[in-house]
Structures are given as structure tokens and as C-alpha cells.
Amino acid sequence: MKHLNEQQIAALAPNPTAAVNGKKISQKGGFVRRECSADGSFYLGECTGSGKSNYIVTADFINPDQPVFRCSCPSRQFPCKHSLALLYEILAEKPFTTCEVSPDILEKRKKIQARAEKKQTDSAAGEKKPAKVNKSAWTKKLKKQLEGLELAAKLIQDLLRAGLGTMGGTALDTYRQLSKQLGDYYLPGPQRLLNGLILEIEEFQKDGEDAHYDKAIRILEELWALVKKSREYLSGKLERGEIGLDESPLYEDLGGVWKLSELEGLGLCKKDARFTQLAFWIEFHKSRKEFIDIGCWADLEDGNIFLTRNYRPVKALKNIKQEDSTFGVAEIPSAALYPGNGNRRLRWESARIVPLKQEDCSALYSYGAPALAPVVKEAKNILKDPLADPVFYKLIRFAQISHSPEGLALTDSQGSSILLADRPGTEPSTNHLLVFPEEDALKNNVLLGAFWYDGVNRRLAIQPLSIITPDSVIRLLY
Image (cartoon, rainbow, N blue to C red; front, side):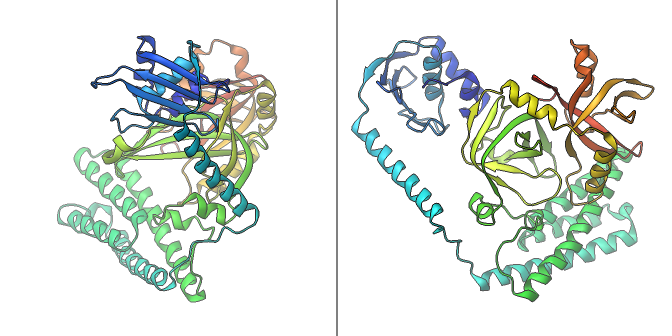
């Protein structure tokens, strides 16, 4: 395995703790036997552990982009800490004796190769058939969703007439009951919004903070927009007899979960793509009771910004791998693109991580929008949609980042400026600019900025995420 590095090991780990434990096993000499095939595609290790017998660990790199790990330990993590420890043994260039690939591994390789060849052949021949849709069941589901939306619409209209101040005491119990009902109507999207609305009203009643009330109003606006647009969308599909998925983002807004095959079936994918991550952070949504790992990626072909989202519900944290920062370039055979405007969500099945080169940085630098005015207009057009992401990410070139009477501000080559500020509820990054070791980085470079609307001061602001120079990427949020 010639191109293994510590970043790749961390990316393969199910969580940071597993990677740390794997490294400790390697550093403490946990392996009593190490073997590898002559071509470097197969590694085997015998590792001491807490069991009576040593664990046998293997790593098969016949497909370097999708290594296969196996271990005789009882751990449910995949790959386990012993598999990761074997990778650290390889990284440390410890001695491995030459061995033959065992017959059972060769047989498993044949099966994997056969499945891959069939998939490739079917794809090339256009034989991949879309999943059959049960028209009767689909129609029944759409009608059920419309019933639930009518129920939600009535609640919202009553609430708008009476005012949010009436959402207290027994009224909140009524809304909680409706929230449970929306799940029965196949509407988890509106259900999450209603839960968020209830939560903000509860918090407002506890502390009287206007921020909770303002957020409740925004959620109510989003919920009403979703109900209104979804009723028109679903009614139109039923009237036209359109059964099955389409490219409308309302499918996901209502709570639908896309499969990669479904997105690819609609042609929503990009082949042989190259993306680099420019920022990474984790958010916690209290109403949804889940963590979201968010990566901000730039397409090295055109500079467009995409997002990856990894949802980890609190009740399933042990079973879902936490994602982490990725440094370098992800070379992706097929990347699925989710429907929507602004910064679309991105997802893929496999990728190869290679180092970010100087020419990649130069390309990113060239993609920076030359002036603020058109970008601000684009951001406003997107952010005014209640169903859009409340943040718009863009690469923009700046003449300088400096102090203003209100704080740090970005100024473009035409003299236009905009305030830099952290979005409430997110990890701060603006103050990192105050302790920048290289002042030249704050002049004539490109910023990856998160445009957001500051409701308190009633203006658009940018949270800085990364600075791109012609030969480097300086990450502020990672």
C-alpha cells in the first residue's frame, strides 16, 4: 500500500477514539506477527488483545479506494481498532514477511470483482432498470400526505389569527398531539418543524428571550411555506397521474430520504469529479435530537460550492460513524447531487483522497467572484426563500480584510464592503482573523464566505470559513 497516510486512516476510522486506540496498539507493539503479499495488496497481522487467543487481522487493498478489513475480535465497530492498528503498522514501515494470499481471500475477491463487473456492464448497457413503483400504494401515500397537510394548514391559520402568545398550557399539548399525528401522515419534515416551533415557544416561556420568539416566527414562516407549496405540488402530481420521484426538493423537505441509486436514476450525478473540502463543522439540532456533520466542498472544475451532511440521531450515535475534516482532493467516480437551489448537497459511495497540489489552489483562487455586488444580489435571492438553506456559501475575491467601526469587514476591489460576523449557533471563526500570523493573507486573496441574514441588525453578513491564496488554503473552520 504505497499511498497510505495518517489522514486516510483517520477517514477510515468509525470515530476518532478508534483511530487513537489503534495507534496506541501499534506504538505499544501489539502485533506479534506481520505478513503481506508480494504485490502489497494484502496484509495480515496477529495482534494481542483481551481475549484468550490473539486476533487475526487482515486488510485487502486489491481495490485501494475501497479496502476490505476483517478481524477475529468481537468488536461491532468497523473497521475495528485492531484493523486501524494494522494500518498504523504499515504507515510506520515496520517489517512484514512475505506471504501468499489465502484461498478464502482470493475467493472473496472473485465475488467482489464479479459484482463490480456486472454493475459496470449493466450501467454501460443502460440495463439498470428503475425500481418498480406500486401505483396504488404511491397514490394512497400522496393522498394521506395531503390529508396531513390540510390538518397542518388549519393549525397554522388558527395560530396566525390567534398569535404565538396563545401557544401555552393546554394549547401546547394540542400541538404536541398534532406533531405525533404528522408522523402517521408520512410527513416527518413538517413534523420536525412543528417540534422546533414548540421547543422555541417553550424556551420563550421559560426565559422570555426575544431570540426564541423571533426564531419561532421564522420556523412558522418556513412551515407555512412548506405546507402551501407541498399541497400544490402533491395535488398536481395526483391530477396528472405522475407516480414516482422527480427532481423536486420538496420530496426531501417533506421528509423523504434519497437513495444514491434514485438520484443517479434521475441523472443527478457528476462523473469523475474532483472536490476539495474547505471547511468542516458539527451542528446539534435540539428539536431533531441529532448531530449533523457538515463539510463544505469546492468543485475543482468550476469552483461551485457543495455541502455534505452526515446525520447522527442521538439515539443511534453508537451505530453511525462521525465524519471528520478531510484534507486533500477527493477523486470521485460518481458523485450524487441532491435537488435544490443554492449550495446543493453532495454524496458519494467511494472516493480516493490525494494531496492538494499548487495548481489546485491556483484554480480555486481563480474561481473567486471579482466583486461583492452581484454575489450579494445572488445571496439575497436565495436566502429570501423560506425553504432554502439559511446560509449561502461562495468564493469571493477581496482587496483587504480590515477593521471597521462595527468590526472586521471585507472590501472588494471596487470599494464595496460587508461586515464579517459569526452566525449564531455555529462555531466562531471570525476572531481567528485577528491573530493571523501572515498579514499579507488578508490582502488580495479569496475568501470562502458563508452569507447569512443578521435579523437583529437587519443586514447581510459573512462568516469567514477559509482563505485561499494562489498556493495554499488556510482553513478557519475545520
